[in-house]
Image 1 (tube, one colour):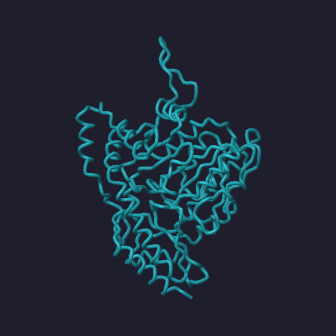
Image 2 (image 1 turned 90 degrees about the vertical axis):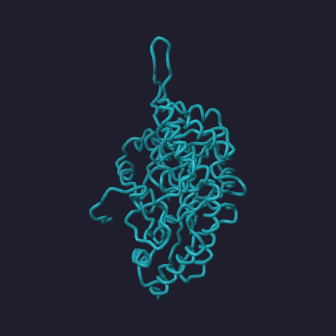
Image 3 (image 1 turned 30 degrees about the vertical axis):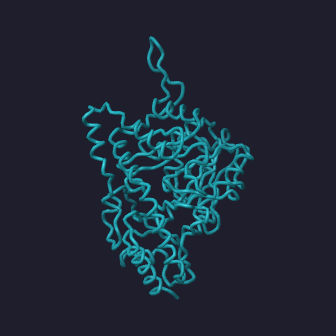
Length: 416
């Protein structure tokens, strides 16, 4: 793969500042009206406020769960969960191949082995059928990712996990307050992790959290993730039995996120309406294949809008199609090839190939290969998948109609 001279990846507002778009930009973000009030409370308290605890209690109440453990981001939240479960090095965690590095970082740092289940044909998500093919005697858990906000079909996945006595937990970074059969994404498995990074649907300055109804998981997550696995021994001080972490959400982040939480529900409801409307508009464009919103998704918390193109219908490549969309006004349109973790995690490929711990035997029980052929459905899907992540509550019907007209114009000009 010739990638040319690489540059450091950009995140947040910095990643969006150079886009020239006719559609509503994600930044500046809409900020909850109480943000300054809560930030001032943190300042006035001399950093002695309970703002992080207030956020945790409020988020748990909104989600109808017993526990919320706040973290600096979703990557730390998922790392805390990986440490909390306490599996053995070389144990396998089945995970979606179409996701972000943050989903798998915690697994790798805890020396678990990620096993990437393929997606369903033509889908961005895994299913019970694709997961089942990956289960071995070393499988311990399934980490489900609700990519783009489309919730995986959870009932069959939960039945499969129960049959094999596997833990299910969720990466809900792109599906906050989305609903599946009347239930909120993140409330199906043992625990779930969320992202509040600036560009996410519930966008704060950064931040994340874990939710769970399991008292033992909650206690251990705080112990491992907040207290650095430290216990205080009288007459001595702190002792550490395990390798703990210090992933605590700062008070100012909690203040911002609490304010954003107060405006998120109507925002998600509007995003759902606009995503469905835009999907209906592009569905009949010849050669355009929108992401299908399953009937079981009651509320589509769409973080990024996307569609595939049928390469047999066009004279141009997907890369050229993206460039022409950008020229016409969808400035942040892009391909999603890099979301294929078995292909983009080059260090993981090297470790598996060279049998570097934990891929050595022991602790591994099998030989692992990570490349573009590991998950062929996902690889084919991402070759022609075009998306933009500035889709937000700022969209009105006229913006959806403009986006559809741009897609139609580019498709018509480049169709065979």
